[in-house]
Length: 158
Image 1: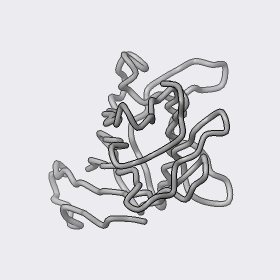
Image 2 (image 1 turned 135 degrees about the horizontal axis):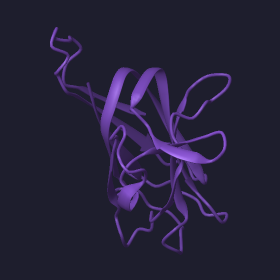
Image 3 (image 1 turned 135 degrees about the vertical axis):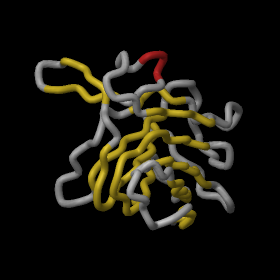
């Protein structure tokens, strides 16, 4: 389900306008949930808020987030962010930034792309069309389907 918060659809000639989109993904009792949002531009920061999400994860590294093109072939925009702590006790609020040309995966905050030959580089944040965000749990764990159990993804883009 999408909470359609968009700080503006118009674009200024300077291309300096920053917009915010919010995607709420409700739990369905499975180990992998996803939501899509229509976007065209460059993402600069992603805030993943798991404070209102319940799950059965028992260790601190069972969660992951993937960002892909939604279509017949879901090509990834960047490498999957893994080893996230989605346990209820931590109520993760993670900040991920796009920093083209930055030191790759510095302290786990830059989103990266691995090219053929396993050479890692940073992602420039460009997206278009329907962008799919997938949150997953490993080890047969699930997101609990309870009232109000949802993940919120805040996307800052230009």
